[in-house]
Length: 76
Image 1 (tube, rainbow, N blue to C red):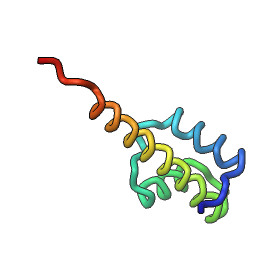
Image 2: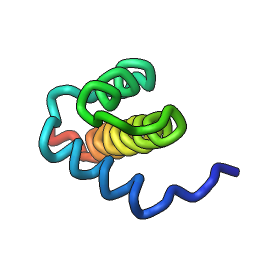
Image 3: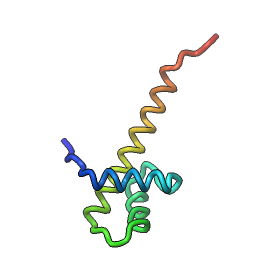
């Protein structure tokens, strides 16, 4: 099981996703570099936790969107 993310990690992650939605994707490494550029002065551990939270959030959103598309009935 994964560890629970602190409120600080979630707050910063959500704020970054709201302010810069086009800069993040489902790749952890890409997100890690973006978080490093956008947040100056964070430790490596905090940076990785934020990037992991963003990656997980986007992956779940993408997965949920694909499930909704599959469930929609096809009209004939």
